Length: 153
Image 1 (cartoon, one colour):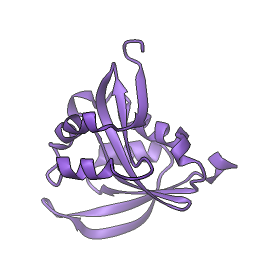
Image 2 (cartoon, rainbow, N blue to C red):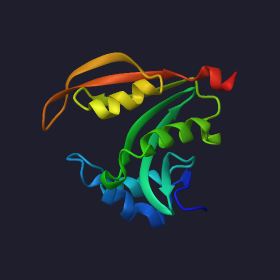
Image 3 (cartoon, rainbow, N blue to C red):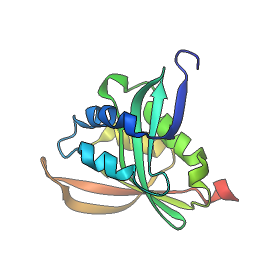
Image 4 (cartoon, one colour):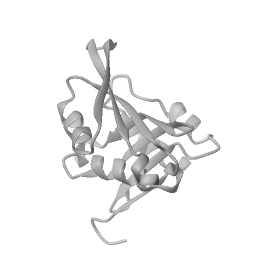
């Protein structure tokens, strides 16, 4: 691997501490046990992005037939603004675990303009608003969707 290169793939038990560290900045962040539970799934649901050999972000999905819900995605605060969030999502779309998917959903805080901008740039569109969905602070959630059926045509 060359310096600055990125790798995407399923998370491993050895990476749980790093994932917990990345998630620690989120008020309602996942625990070490939540990450460990994800790794017990039969098919991969928790993926990591590494830059220079170090985990800089993760994404967790739930797949139901042709639909995928992105249930958690985070990039290490010190690694933001380097395109890693975009790399995570684009890598997921190209991963073999993603074959046959037609639609992707995720929720984002209405006030998280950086994330909303990223998702808009990737083609996500607002499908629904969930009033007062988030706590601390109370904020609406926007449900975004992306049609990826053309990727499998």
